[in-house]
Image (tube, rainbow, N blue to C red):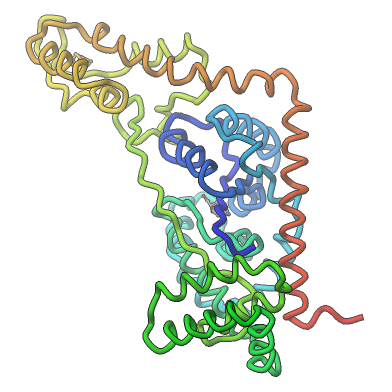
Length: 400
Ligand code: TRP
Ligand code: SF4
C-alpha cells in the first residue's frame, strides 16, 4: 500500500483540446502502463472558483471523461472517478483543516495570483483559500507518492508534503512508540529484522538514501505486517513517529508546446483551440483559415516560417522532409499557404481518428461511461476508507 502510485485530477472546465492532449493526457496514457494510476474529476475544485455557476459542472464532467477515454486513458489500467462521489476527501479536508496553519495557505502563490487574475469574481471565500488543502486531502487520502502536475501546481505538492509531515509529527507520536516499533521489527522475522536494523542505522547515521530506499522495498514485501505496524516501521526508519500520511512528490509535466491557431499557447480563453474530438470539417476549416506570415499578401510573396503559426504546427506534426519542404517552399514562394497547411490538416485528422473511434461507444451509450465511473468510484472509495480509519484513529475519533 506504500508502493508507487500515481494520482492526478483535472477540473471539469469543458471540452478538452489538443493542448490538453499534448500537455497532460499523453503523459497519463504513458503513466498508466507503468504505475497503478488514479485519475479523477475535481468537481469540488471547480466550485471553489465557479460557485456561482453550478450548472456548468454536470455536463462538463461527462464530456471531459469521454475526452480522457478518447485520448487513450484505459479504465482497465487506470481508476477513473469523480471527487464528490468519494466524500472521504471532504472528511480528510476537514480534519486537516484543524491543524493547517492559515499562514501556509495564504502563502500559496496561486491564492493571490488567481484572485488577481479572476478579479471579476469575489474569491475572498473560505473555500478558495482552502483549495490547496482540499488538493492535499485528494492526494494524501490515497497515499499517492507520484503526482503529475504542471509547473503552476508544484507549490501545492510542496504544501501537501508539509501538511503530511506536520500531520505525522502531531499524530504519529503515539505513547510507547519506540517500544511498539521494536516489537514490530521482531515481527519481520529474524533475517529481515536484522537487515531492517542495518539499513535504518545506515540511513540515520550516514544519511544513506539508498539504504532508505532498500528498507522501503523490504517493507513493501513484508506481507504479514498489520497496517499500524507498517506505519510504525516506515516512521521508525526516519526517526519520527508513525508515518500515517505519505509525502508525495511531483512528476513535473513538461509545459505543452502545443500552439494555438494564432500562435499563442492553445487555450480556451484565447479562443484558438482545436478540440480533441472536433468534427473533421471544422478542423479543416480552422486550419485553412489560420493566419500565416503577414508578409505573404500575394501568393508570389516569399515568407518566413518563423513568423507563421502554421510552422509551429509543422514542428509538432511534420517529419524533417516536410519541414524542409516548408522552409524552402515558403522562403522562395514555391508553395502556397494552403498547400503548406495540407500536411498539418492530415496529421491532425490522423491523430484524432483513433480518438473519435474510442469515444464513439461512450457517446452512443452513456450507461457505459456511468458504469466505468461507478466502478472507479467504488475502488477509490475503498482505498480512501482505509486511510480514513487510520486518520480517525490517530486523531482520537475512534472511540465507542
Ligand atoms: N488543482 C488542480 C488544478 O487546478 C486539480 C487538482 C485537484 C489536482 N486535486 C488534485 C491535481 C490532486 C493533482 C492532484 O489543475
Ligand atoms: Fe506559413 Fe507555410 Fe504560408 Fe510559409 S507557406 S507563411 S510557413 S503557411
